[in-house]
Length: 378
Image 1: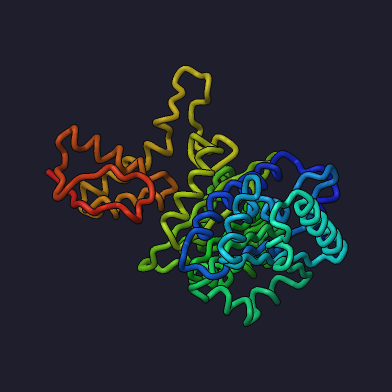
Image 2: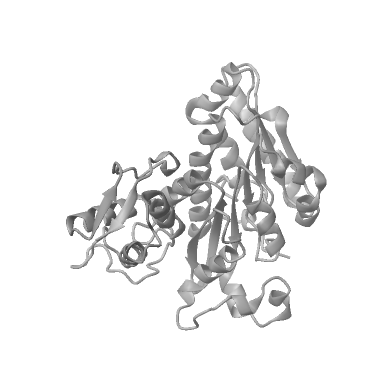
C-alpha cells in the first residue's frame, strides 16, 4: 500500500508541489470563468487523498475549493450575479476508504466554514461537489467521464496526483490530449522508472526503448519522462507540454502539465519560472548554472535561456521559423516564456541579420492574439 502522506506533516517537496497546483489553478480558473462560450466548468482531483495533513495544512482538494472562491469570494459573487453561470462542478475521488471518509469530512468542513462568512446566503459550490472512492481506471474509462471530456462547451481542469507512475498510461495521456478545453497536471515518480526501467512492472506501462536515460545525469530523468509523453503527440497537432522536476534527497519526481492552448502554456510557465528563475523547471539547479550570490550569476542569460535562444536563431537562419507566430509558439514549446523570441528578434535586427516583412510588433503575452509578421534572413 502506498504511504499515506496525509497522516503526517507534508514535507517541503509536497508543499512545493501543492503550491504549484494552487498557482496553476489560480491562473487557469478565471480564464474559463470569463469565457462566454463555456457553460460548465469541471474541476477534478482524482487522487485527492484525505484533504489535509496532520497539522491541518490544505491538500489539493481544499486548495481547489479555496481558489475557486477567489479572494474575498469574488468569483462566487460573480457567478451568483450571473444566475449561477457557468455551472461549477467538483469531482473529488479517493480510492482508499479511510482517506475517502476523511476527505468527505474535510471538504464538508471547508464548505461549512466558508458559508459562515458568505454574504450570498447560499453556497454556489456545495450543491455541485461530488466525492467518490472509485478505482481510477473505472473513472477514466466510464462513458459519462468521456462525454464530459469531449464536450466543447465544458472547461475541464484535471489534477492527477497519483502515487508512483502506473495510472497515466499512453492511452490515458492521449485521451486527455485530445479532449477540447481540457488542461491537466499529473505527478509521476521519475526516479523509480529510471531505476527499474528493465523490470516488467515498469515495462508494462512504458516502452523502455523510447526513454533515453543518461545514467551520468540522474537529475534529468524527469525531463526524459516528459520527452516520452511529448513524443506520443502527433506532429501535426498543436499541443503544449511542460515539466517540473522536484528533487527529494537523491530521488527525482515531477509534474507534467498539458494544454491545447498557448495561453494555458503561458499561464503554467509563469508559475514555473517564478519557482525556478534559472530554467523554469526544477527545485534544484538542473543545468548547473552559477548560483545567486556568485560572481558570474546572471538570471537573464542562464544555460537554459541561452540554449533556447541559440535554437531559435538556428531555426530562423534555416528558414524553419519564418514568422513571429511560429517563433512565439516554439519558445513556449521549449518551456520558455514568449518574450525570449522577441529578445532574439531584437538582437538579430540590431545585428542586421534579418528584416521584417509587414508591421513588427513586440507581443510577448497572449500570443494567440498576436498580429503576424514575416521574417526575412539577410
